[in-house]
Length: 189
Image (cartoon, rainbow, N blue to C red; front, side):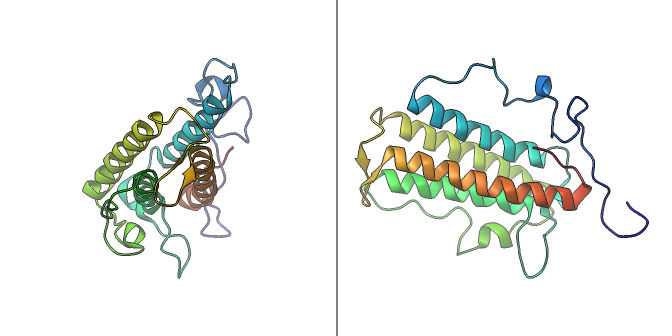
């Protein structure tokens, strides 16, 4: 902590590029260095990278740190973001199907954030929920090889849904950057 304030000092674990979250050789988002071929592979690559980024921003924190709120009156926390994105993944599944919507994971509106309390069982459940919902969404979308195919009651194109998913994760990864910096000062790309 800086003696002049209650804010943590800025830091990173990266050594090659000190403004990055991780060194390129240690970054799980840097696969073999080749960019994907084709539109579907490109969209999928961006989505996977943002999903990994969110998890990276939460790594190494305990339940209290993950549940720490940003600034009042916001209820946003890193744990809340994990829970929120699990809920959003489930909602996207509802966009693809025509039947009755799946029930919400956490209950009423904003329960994903309100229920993000500093308990290890809540943290473990959030990670499990997110992993399960992501896998279910991925399996559903894999059944639609044509990105232009329109699905669900809203007649949304698979391409549009994938872009919307990338947008949602990208916005929340930006929130996660700021939340993480407030927790322990860690910054990076």
